[in-house]
Image (cartoon, rainbow, N blue to C red; front, top):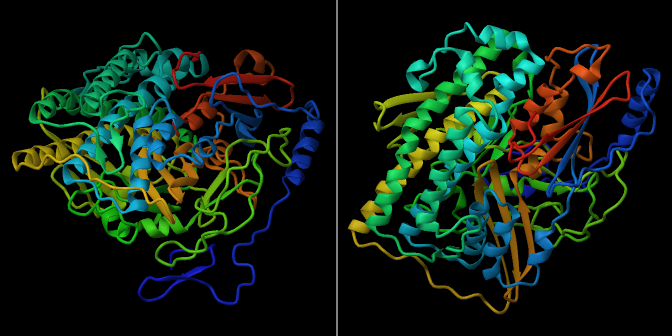
Length: 627
């Protein structure tokens, strides 16, 4: 049984149908958030808080996300949290009525950091809708493009965005006792990274000036160089098109790419050793750090990196080609692997707008997918984007983000989900360098300047901010090894005379075609759901990792992933309750939020109980606003 909450059941052959005898199968009860708001307001009033405080969205940075928390400093806990995306962009509306050929170019603008993945997932959606199978060389070259795009994102997150939260400069302001302990604590993985003491690592994590920070900037440049050797330019490459790539590839180009790729062999070992040391050190200082950003391991992943022997772009065979990927699709609910089938992942998706600045749509055009499985009226193929701006209210609507769910669970997304689900599923077809075991992921790193080695990431017992980042560190060697495997495949294709880079196709001028691109951004899960009517885009829905992670409360009152992770976060920094203005930074809350790698500038507002004091900290994608 795949679904516990949706009214869908399966027969012995795995065919899905609606449960019989359910009058309104997709109905749901909406919880009145006003009741919780009244309780909170009463609590704030009794403790000297200002009443009727309205937190307007912070809109001075494009794509901003405001995050409101009420913090009880006496008991060192968060008692309320709300995630607010404060900007509407409307790419789904922009794409309506256009040629499907425009989709890859326009949708890539959805992100200035990872536009390449949007180009590719758009091409995949069109390939499914129009029955286009790319040549095998194209499939492996897209895999390489994706892997080196990740090799840009991972160092960016680990050292420019999240990393400074563990630096000497910031930790000294909140927990100087940790810095003092670091001065005498040896680094266990010196052989991997070369640092003698933990203080040396923390000092080089300092923003803007630290050597690790600067080195990460250099590695992002190396990854971008590798991408443009094939993709032509970045951001927003125009070489990724339905049915192929609008470039030619030869052995010389692949050799130039290899010279950049091998730099990540040593760097991957170094990064894993560094973050293992940092997180183990913080946990040794205070085991309660395991609670920062904690939530159940409930996550979703589409899988990425198609195998050329299996991928045919069709929805009918997507379970087969999806499970042949180097990264396995899947859904985890509280650590249990529920499914690895893309059809079930697709059928279980819904989006809700009860607490968002959108109008609820009418209609249920697609009651089934192409295989006859039932679809909710809230499924992305049925969703319409109807903006409804209004006053922000905790009782009603407070965000421009929607509330995506799978089987009506709030699921998180991340590069770490890719690693976690692949390790647990143990289904990878090509195991030249990457070997899942069911409980871990073994990575066989070849020799470069450092000796060849085998690294192993283990599924953690507790899912929290530290483990998100630790897994993200392992994603550097993971991505590099997948790129290397596909590089060998590409070389073999060229030597065999396989040089085709596109499959011709035509867009029908009549009829309806639907498709979905299953791919992944540096931050995880990504889908584009496409409907074509009479040769033009009739509906286009983009579901990004940050749409999932930043989602508001579900209609039935479950917090979104950011919200839940912050609610579970203890306040571990040193705070003078009598002088919170001087002392309180909210670094633990920021660690929780940043561990998800928010794909937009993000501002956190923290209100301190027993005062009207408001702490504002920017969570940006450039790290320039860090204290």
